[in-house]
Amino acid sequence: MVNHEPGDATIRPLIKVLNAVLEPLSRRDWQGQDRLPATGGVIVVANHISNADPLALGQFLAYSGRWPRFLAKSSLFGVPGLGRLLRRVQQIPVERGSSRSSDALAAARAALEDGQAVVVYPEGTITRDPDLWPMRGRTGAARLALATAYPVVPVAQWGAEEFLRGPRLGLPRLWARPTLRMRVGPPVDLGDLRGRPLDAALLAEATERIMAALTGLLEDLRGEPAPAVRFDPRPGGRPGVGAP
Image (cartoon, rainbow, N blue to C red):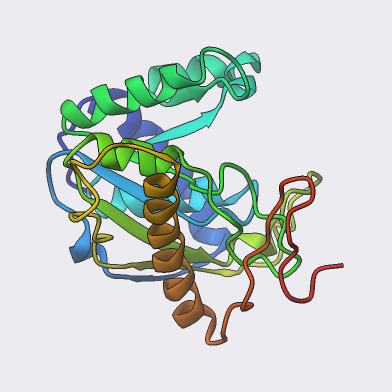
């Protein structure tokens, strides 16, 4: 693991501990690390399948040469001990549904300008799709991407749901020893959208391109097609195929 990004002295020991925990509990199937820029700001977008998957994704990115800065819900920063650790490793709190929600995008942009890898779950939360396919995306990742010139690199993941499936909480199935699969795709092409007036239609188009890239990677990873209709978690939204 060679890395000299900001925060090295704090994050390196944490990643080593994380690796020591995950290595005996799981297997790895990692592909496409060469598509991650070795240096400079990058927006990493990923599907969200489990409360355990940030650990798997963080390990993958660190051992691919990038320290991850996750946009994470602010409530985690209020957990004794955990909040202090998250701040020390420069994670970014998101104040959902408040007047300060835009602070996270400002902090993410500053991190990008500092040459860091910012990780965004474009769904905004763990998928509610019954088969854990990517849901309808939120616009945060698109807003950040369109406001900057940094590449948007999709990473599809699968396997962490065997520890904890979907949004449920509980004791993880540590005996499962799943294969944590990661696939990195080419940067999402948003070049023709940058520089245009930012409106709802533009954000929707950018968001859909991001979600389509993630869904396509996950289809390859799982070896099966995604539902024709993306699950929509909003009140009155259309459920995906197979949803109750």
